[in-house]
Amino acid sequence: MFEDLRFPLLVAPMAGGPSTPELVAAVVEAGGSGFLAGGYLKAEALEAQIAKTRELTGGLFGVNLFVPGERSTVDLSGYVARVSEVARRYGAEPGEPRWDDDDYPAKLDAVVARRVPLVSFTFGLPSPEDVARLHEAGSRVVVTVTNPDEAARAAGVGADALCVQGFEAGAHRGLFTDDPEDPAGGAAYGLLAALRLVSVRTGLPMIAAGGLVHGADVAAVLTAGAVAAQAGTAFLRADEAGTQPVHRRALAEGGRGTAFTRAFSGRPARGIVNGFLTENSAHAPAAYPQVHHLTRPVRAAAARVGDEEGLSLWAGQTYPLVTEGPAAEIFGRLREQALAALRRVALD
Image 1: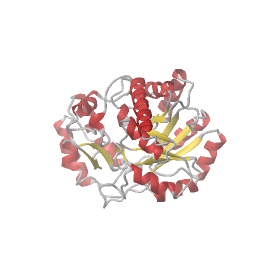
Image 2: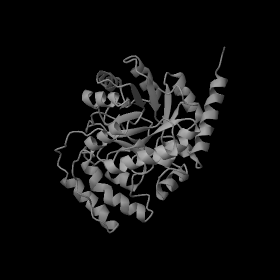
Image 3: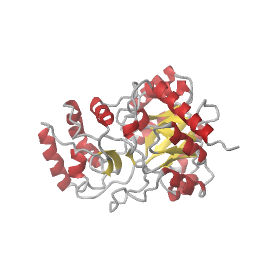
Image 4: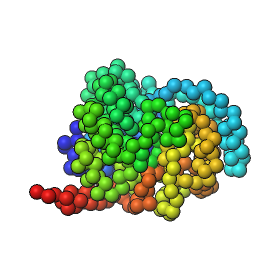
């Protein structure tokens, strides 16, 4: 799948702004690959991003889609009141806590029609019929998994590869099912443990994701059996990334820890600890995307005034080590570090 890459490193899909055609194309042109983030976009906007990426590069890239989940019936009134109080601090109104399918059918039609080479899925499984459509269009299908059972189910619908996500990863966990009684939403495996456990359940190629910010990290997952490494946080400060200035500032400061929270979206996600996360994590219901829509105006207002206490600062556990600069330079540094690490441990 990635045999033709000069180096098997992919830039992860980062929904909500950080992923851009320019970022993906820069990594592709540097010798890797990557995914556009289809999450939260309408089909027309995703089509425009695909077209722009193809203008910038003729190399291998993919698109990531969110699989719609079941509509939650949990009572949101208490959390609506909490978010409304925060919204008033910014002179904003809370959003409508509505469920939607993230325009999934139309976006699936778009990637099929445009024969996107790689299509990955997060938050669940595409149907076998959707996988068959993609295969007929010449696409390879990747499913994000966090544990061996999810991996086995992905193999069962015809996935070509798995993106194995460790608990170190920033942003949303790719869990198929969110256990509301568990702050992490379910069993949380470190990346190396997840790779080992998944590898004995399926023979599918594995893309490793979670906290990879140094080339030695990339070397570690390649020697652990992954066919490629996928990095998101490592590229959040790239010049081509669409990361908001306030988010960039928090990443650069690097003085806070990270934690899982449902406070911003209703799904467990790892972010830099700030005021909104601390005040609301214990109260946020497992209701995605209703909570996402509820808090969206608050996050937007906090970003406008540059207040890092009020928006989701998604980042992996190792984010303080991330550097800024052109994406090609970040990619090149990771590649050279990985090759040096592999040479150090070559024993024969």
